[in-house]
Amino acid sequence: PENIRNIAIAAHVDHGKTTLSDNLLAGAGMISQDTAGEQLAMDTKEDEQERGITIDAANVSMTHEYEGTNHLINLIDTPGHVDFGGDVTRAMRAVDGALVVVDAVEGAMPQTETVLRQALREGVKPALFINKVDRLISELQEGPQEMQERLLAVISDVNELIRGMTEDYDDIDDWTVSVEEGTVGFGSALYKWGVSLPSMQRTGMDFGDIIDLEQADKRDELHEKTPLSNVVLDMVCEHFPNPVKAQPMRIPRIWRGDDESDLAESMRIVDEDGEVVFMATDISMDPHAGEIATGRVFSGTLEKGQELYVSGTAGKNRIQSVGLFMGSEREEVGHVPAGNIAAVTGLRDAIAGSTISSVEMTPFESIEHISEPVITKSVEAQNMDDLPKLIETLQQVAKEDPTIQIEINEDTGEHLISGQGELHLEVITQRIRDNQGIPVITGEPIVVYREQPQQQSREVEGVSPNRHNKFYLTVELLDDEIVEAIQLGEVSMDMPELERREALQEAGMDKDTSQNVEDIHRTNILIDDTKGIQHLNETMELVLEGLQEALDDGPLAAEPVQGSL
Image (tube, rainbow, N blue to C red):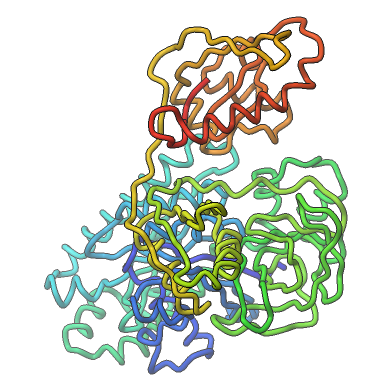
């Protein structure tokens, strides 16, 4: 495990992640050098190649020799478009390092900030690659001095973002990137050359030489002298933590189980002989093999035929095959030990975010998607005969992509899909049409709204059917800090009560109220203010059911209610 690196490439849309991945694959001898940069090997689906954007995170494993030792690099190429941000969040759970790519001309953009935040929240260490440096030379005609100033400005912007995001984290000392330390690379993924301070020292190439060769149109010579794949893969091997270093820090962040247990120790030391602990971060559908769960092996060794528990479901699932992803191909292997990213078939009960293990255990923290669905479209089957197949496909879609919400109305035959944006929904409906062969009619996209109380209500009386019991309820606005804490997953009903109380008090709730939290539904909290009442527990389930129904369909426009107490 000391020679494994699990990394994700993340960036704003069109800053060159997939083109960079091509270079790395070519450097590892997996695709031809000539087509690298244009082949976009990690855009494995037809619609990704057609649209020219990455839609699904794609995994590949490659080897790279660094300082005489062979390293295994498991890489995930993530989408940059904001609509597919959920894929980035899930990929970050499986990796230990994130290579953030920034366009030299455009600089740090909104999605750069988002992907950095997603990485740092998961405890993933960043490094920076500034791409499209050739544009500064050929298009903007910048000299060495101007170029240096521009590149330093990009680095300081990125560092400012990292500093701002890590100041509250006690377990991160200083993760800012620096040229001197070798955690910043520069180059052009399209023309396959790259440099970093260590590579300049090794090859003797400096920016002056690069500008001369670039202006003289000797890009092939530039690629030969300082190939991008060596610079980036050396940086990955040198500066990203291996699983043995990363897991002791990451486990306390993503798992709330007993840190004194043998299981915790086995995950900390990445013990391949320990109990199996695997977290599925992605579910994809293979027409031949069925569902494939991809994720990180934190402990133990995955093998064909193992029977494993899936968190939140009864019984066990049997592994049918174990493999590694090579872009669109899946290579089956005999076993995958701890510290790797594996692709497994046979885990029919798993969804993205499931904890899969050989012993029953506290599951990992759920993967928190920061964004909520904002656009809804209705989808109906053109032919009624296709309805059962459509329902099955929609359920599969919801399993593969947790950022999509699906409401199936069996009475009207209308199904509502809510997602991150119009492109997100368009891609899903196109895939239902093309891949499943189901002709569907989609409605106009509608924006999803939220309702919220504006002030404290009067006391409302509810009477039970037998007229013997009366309930009194009031509703008021919840503080923004508390709503944010719930959205970020810092407060939830899955936490131990004491921990939840402390988190709520930290967010500004007073002590007495925080002790009486009965339920949290979306971003709404129910407080039980009753005193000394017998048999309340027997009806509490019904009260919660009624309340959740009312909060899902608000009184004003039947939109979900948020931020009420």
